[in-house]
Length: 85
Image (cartoon, rainbow, N blue to C red):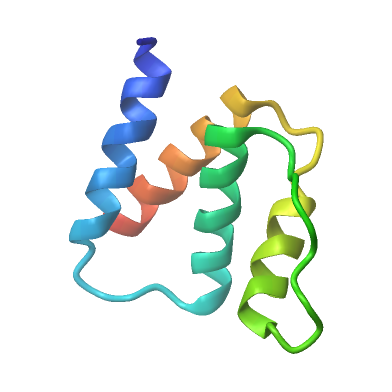
């Protein structure tokens, strides 16, 4: 396992210990960066029109299309560190 992957997984664990829930925009950013870092470009069907949360998550992840997994992992780690500081 690479150091970056290890840091990424550690950040995913660390964010669970966050004292206060981040705002929705930050949660979407975390979600999208995590998915891009762990799975790469978006795949699967877009959720239905009335699935507002699913659609927001899908669109946030879709905006990262083309971002490398390494870059997404690094950005996720940095965001988690900011939130924990």
